[in-house]
Amino acid sequence: MVRVTRVLFVEVPILGALLLAAIGFAVALVLRYELVEPVSIGILCDEAANAPLWCGPRRGLIVSAQSMPGRVLMPALACLLWLVRSEVTARRLGFLVLFLAGFGLVFYNTGLAVVALVIGSLRLIRLEKAPRQA
Image (cartoon, rainbow, N blue to C red):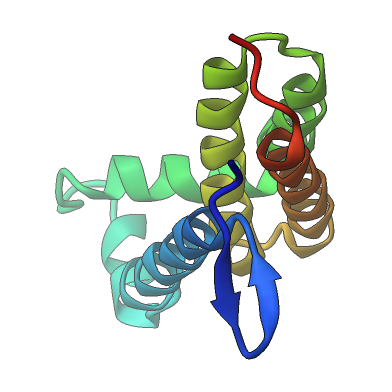
């Protein structure tokens, strides 16, 4: 039996997973516009002598979002998702991929995040439609 939710006459089998992507989007939106983008916070963190302790994680977040390994993480996990044989592990990895893809839509990785969102969604839909094995 496939768990299906009806939204505007359309069957959406992975509505919960897409909600998780929306949560990732919202978390990234708050982090970006409340912690990364404000000029006053950037000036405060650039002062080496008086920088608060949270400037290190802020800088790490910015560097990981803009560096190549950070940008390739989401599509790589999405492709790895197709290689995982265990249904439970594939579902958990799919949820992580959709959360990171929603996060990446805000944090400078739009193109690769969309690729990961599509690949992850397709894999989760395929898992939902697959016949259950006893």
